[in-house]
Length: 334
Picture 1 (cartoon, helix red, strand yellow):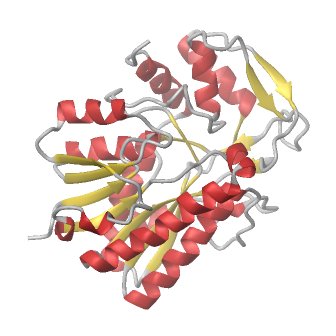
Picture 2: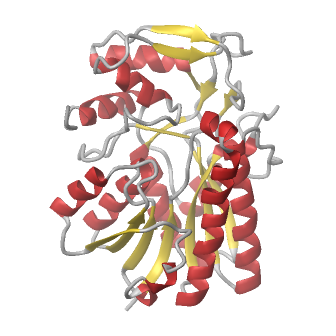
Picture 3: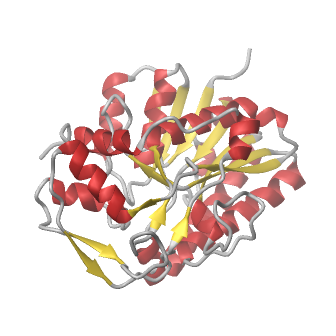
């Protein structure tokens, strides 16, 4: 019988925590680790309350020297690697911290895999690795042209994972997400309003609950439909499902592969704001600000490779992303 225990790094984060919750719901035994550098123990408490028996958590940093001493690590069948700092603006101000955490952390995780004889890893990558592309939508064959330090750390991590997979006969899949929004349908884990990541939905929610009077829209002179940046927004439930599909198929890849997770639709910031207001009967005020370093005009996915090879497809609408994001934040402590 195949082992049913998985290791999740970044298990307290928005995406890692949502994945952890859903994995437990599906009957996996989960060993979660997180250093809480941009997350909260509150998420772990909420998960433990529902799944105490098959959820094991350790406060751990991937850079810790005793990482290999985790109890029963050899029982793990696969690693889901979400742990990363992820703010584009912050990465420009603190490049060394980002390279240390994101890149060196990934190297340390590979060392752990070798120590514990774990040969499967699914990596939380990002569409940021593509940078500006003339051809849209973007497929996986596009030349990688990262524009930010954050994007650089994801590309370098992918390169390290690819080389290690080919050298050490590992199975590694990198999932390049576009722009996750919303909340798990059980409304257990929400997007953080305390995040400094610059995530658009975090800023919208902060305004919606009255912490800010208005949000900043960075750039109004892009060559897009309404002058604001266009992105491929995707429901977090679809992102999470992509990980389970990848896990199901990982034994069939040679050593390394990568897949886009996106809807294939391009939505502007103003269209997102209007949809949030309409669905939730809110009025989010905004003001235009200058473009930020590292931001792109337009970026959306060609998800056909994941559609075909992973048998995965995005199912949820922009309206559901906005509705679920707002409803989930209602369950958070004031």
